[in-house]
Image 1 (cartoon, rainbow, N blue to C red):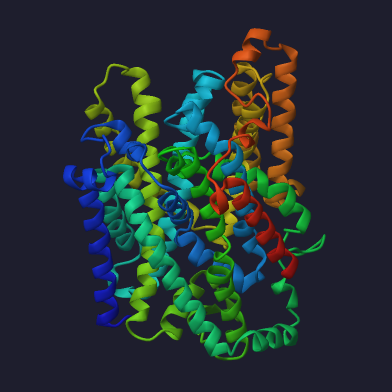
Image 2 (image 1 turned 90 degrees about the vertical axis):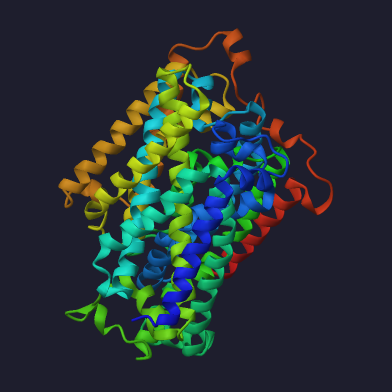
Length: 554
């Protein structure tokens, strides 16, 4: 389906990214990239946190690139085709959560000089909390960040290259290339390649959006088509109660913060970019820059799927290859758009953008897994292990994670909607983590016992309900929207943690020594950079801007 020129573009991109990552992993490349940093071969700070040298543009683009994977490009287009702009809420609501990261979480992490988020839980609660979060973070990185990314990338490549040997061949090739520069180069290689990949990703997504827009003829024909098909609700971001999607506005408002705080403020794969910041202001501004970037996916990733729906209804997009018994299997809508809408050469660019999204997310997840296994698990049992040994263990862990994620693909492929499947899993694992971080950072009265028991209780509750709903899908509990389920789980976890803390309160000395903000206003007292670059001004601009967008697409 792709021309030789497209293949040349794709291969050129792949070789360029791998070469950049390997260069960053060499001693000379690392020293140039760090511009005077102290990270050396075998140094854990340099390998896992880029020597604490990252500036705000790199942090913002790396956060964005790690978040935006093939899952987003493919599954958001699928959701745009099926339900319109609705799942764009996951993009715009993320901006609010990133403001929380910038205002409250990032400065706390930088001030306490933690190396991983489980490291913080040990200081705030106890070692058992650290171990539990480390294991949960590794599992979530393998399943959510790597497994689903491989699945969606594999589906696209299998569709575009039917002669390639199937989905697993495509996945193994991408896994090998991504693993190569990630294992060699560490976080610095990851963020440098992510910076390049962000540009390619946005450019490729903009190309296919523009192509669909021009073939349809603009906004007027889109509205006319939706009116004619009785689907004008597809343009609405906030749906009323009883909406067939299962995502009314109140479910989004209540449920997204549970998922968002875990993902953006308490997930090692994401927050590791912030931990590598050169100082507090760069950490804050990087998070806010990412919040600005999160405005664009609705128009670049979700809207193309809606345009594809309109084109299909008008007979301008042939989806017969995806249609069975009159029903369109929308998983590969994005792939068809690449082939049907783009000229030779540009197809290769957009596929390169897809690979950029896949590789950046997988690379970020692999680096966080390396950090967690080495610093949070292995070092506990081998405290005297030299730093070169820790780096080696991290590299081995990354390779094993690649193998494990590929093995999970048949299980993940059972979801009809990839994005809803991903979000449903997050909704069942995020609440206990969100609880212990929120309460732990803002309330000195939280006890070590409460943190430990909440993680155990919440994880068992989430796993139990998820398994029950999977095996008995026709009972009432399975019909609760996953966003509301996340909110109910968080309420239960927070009530449980507060009750345990109050049952056996901390002493006055323990309260005074608790590693948390003594007042919610403490992180807002830092002056920040002068002028427009001040984090308070930037936060206000983000909140007002996203609020205005919601008003337009309410």
